[in-house]
Image (cartoon, rainbow, N blue to C red; front, top):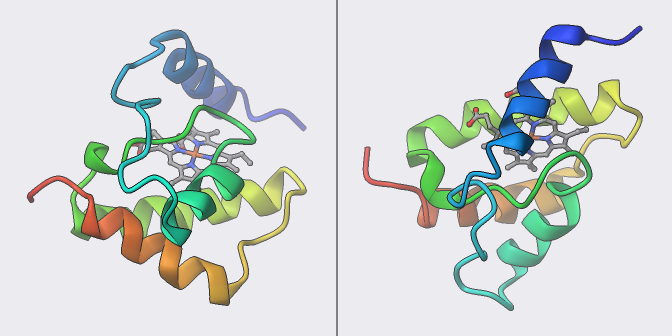
Length: 95
Ligand code: HEC
C-alpha cells in the first residue's frame, strides 16, 4: 500500500531541494554526522540539524523511525539512536 499523502509530502520536500534540508552536515567526521548520513538519507537528502529545535527533534526522529520500519529499513538501534539524536539536538536551531 502506498501512502500517497506521505509520498506527496516527500516529493514536495525533495522537489523543494531545500538548501536547508540538504545542507552539508556540521561537525563532519563526528559519529553523529556519520549516523545521520547513514540512517537518514535512504528516502531524502541529509536533513539539516538546524531545521528543528532540540525539543522538536525527538518527535521528528521518532516519526522517521516509523518510516524506516514501514519502508522495511528497520529501526535504528538504540546504541546509534542516542548519539544520532544528541547530534541533531546539539546542532539544532535555538527554540
Ligand atoms: C524510510 C524513509 C525515511 C528515512 C530513512 C528517513 N526519513 Fe525523514 N522523511 C521521510 C518522509 C516520507 C518524509 C515526509 C513525511 C514526513 O514528514 O513524515 C520525511 C521528512 C523528513 C523531514 C522534513 C519534515 C519535518 O518534520 O521537518 C525531516 C527533517 C526528516 N525527514 C528528517 C529525517 C531524519 C533526521 C532521519 C534519520 C533519523 C530521516 N528523516 C530518515 C522518510 C524517511
